[in-house]
Picture (cartoon, rainbow, N blue to C red):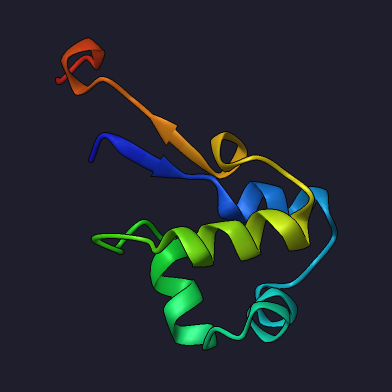
Length: 74
């Protein structure tokens, strides 16, 4: 996948559990887990905005693009 989700990194930096974040933004822990593990096919801007507000960060702190053509496949 070319989009990497660094939500776990931001949660660690803010010393917040995923359960606490889910509660604060009104998302189920299961749905937050899907996003956190990179299994989500999409994310709503309203969800991304709520996450950024609670973690005091920018969308680019959470989502990262990796060009798969640059990766070495063995």
